[in-house]
Length: 153
Image (cartoon, rainbow, N blue to C red; front, side):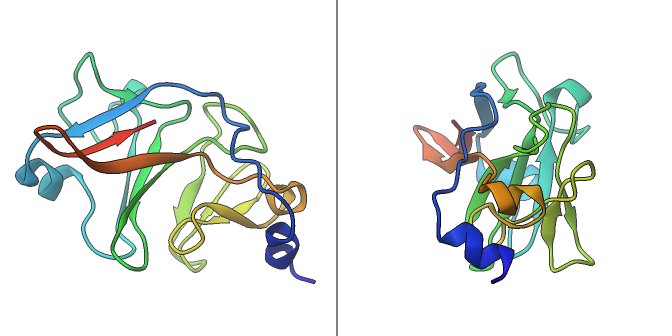
């Protein structure tokens, strides 16, 4: 039985990463075009403490969760967001990264766990995360008020 099948048969825990504020605002479609993601398999990291991306207009009201935010468009082109912190490692500075050479899976550099963020909403597919059923924490992405798009908890 594959790790993905095993993980899908039991409950996935996506609450291992501490709850922290998330608020990334794209006020206009132009902001989204520059700093957001458009098209299937596109992605960007947002880490306020490191000013990633460097040109993003961070404000006092911008928050990027525990380990940062992975903003992406899934295989159908819908925006999705996850905390970058690996739920196995449980540390803000141990962040998953997209491995473009490995089917665009998010991979933890520390424990080696891999997560399918583009079609399985952050489910673990291998490594300790798949064994223990630890998924990435998801965030909401969508229009809010007068803003074009907001990523929030």
